Image (tube, rainbow, N blue to C red):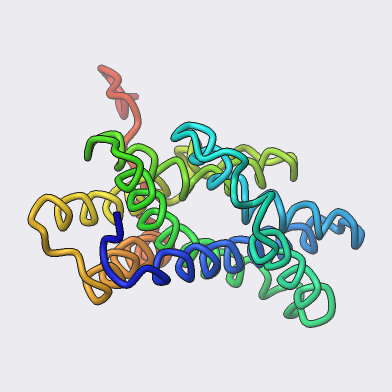
Length: 214
């Protein structure tokens, strides 16, 4: 089923792959990996979440292995970062911005594709989150870091993705999904993640009786 302009989800997917791949390549630079490591981390970050989504919904072989744009886009990102990466002291900020952009885009495209394959709206939101966060989790694991999604001392990561995916689900339920509202949903996830980074928003930990007492 074509929800609207047929090419829009495809281009959003490619945009999400590219910006996530840039964040993976920048992290590889920060971890002082070689050119091969930069390319691998870019590919894993850009394609990891989408591969998981496609395997779950039965879209096999996944487009990551059949469409050249899907696996060439991370290589382009890796090449650009290899030659044009910012000064070392600015890499952390750049990673956060590109990662937030990928999070917003993939939360939308993951939800849309799951819906196109006939899943219920709840399952679509779950796969939107998995698509958005999966590549970042794999990136952090390969870079020998605890994934941001699981760390209490890091700014909220899953909530912005859930917000973007949830808005898409609401729009689908209300038959109000258009190219403009799709972009709005992606911007919601992106901006929430940026605000979390700026204001240091964190999810609460499990409540403990007596916490804070001396």
